[in-house]
Amino acid sequence: KLAGCTLFITGASRGIGKAIALKAAKDGANIVIAAKTAEPHPTLPGTIYTAAEEIEAAGGKALPCIVNVREEQQIINAVEKAVKTFGGIDILVNNASAISLTGTLETATKKVNLMMDVNVRGTYLTSKACLPHLRKSRNPHILNLSPPMNLNPMWFKNHCAYTISKYGMSMCVLGMAEEFRGEVAVNALWPKTAIHTAAMDMLGGAGIEKQCRKTDILADAAYCILTKPKTFTGNFIIDEVLLREEGVKDFDVYAIAPG
Image 1 (tube, rainbow, N blue to C red):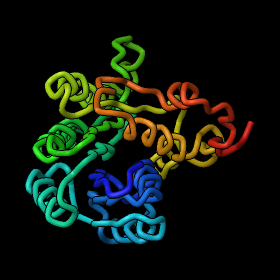
Image 2 (spheres, rainbow, N blue to C red; image 1 turned 90 degrees about the vertical axis):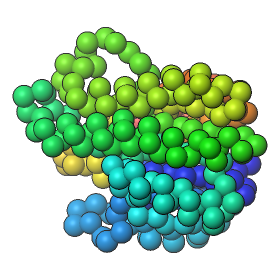
Image 3 (cartoon, one colour; image 1 turned 180 degrees about the horizontal axis):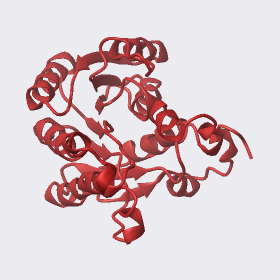
């Protein structure tokens, strides 16, 4: 279904972004890996180049681009390179995120700036750079990895800055879905459970993976969304809810520790 489509995925060198990329690559999609890890990281696996090798091995075409979404010019350069290489952009996945699950007094200002810059501003600017090209696509989509808007204080009290930054991404969905209705689909996807990634290992420590699901569940849910018509827009989707609607019954296949 995604054969020949060009996906611009931020933070695609590892984790959820890479899982979505590999799922699309199996169809023969073109993947722009817009991420900042060019040199191997001391603790995190993968670079844009190792991700590119995996994408090509899975059947896709890969364009690794060094992109720190805090730098607008790097975003613009990568978008131009993508259009030059593949002739356009059909899908944007705003996956790059910074996280600090800390209280107000424990969150250093540089961490606040990082989360606001990457999550809100980065998502906004990447969308802005891709939209003129998305509008020319046959079935364009923007997918933000961000949560449903829920103003219950419990989602704010333990990590106010992080929640504000992720809701900023969700507000981009709310606004842009309406602004570009009929032209570009804009949706949000969020997991029902914790997802096992390198970030989760850092946050949760040893043994946390037993409570997590694999990144495959988000890749499968993203694929469902991105293959729908552009009239499917303005939705805040939970991975398990969507996959149940699509007929998936066995969720143990996604569990790190089945059962």
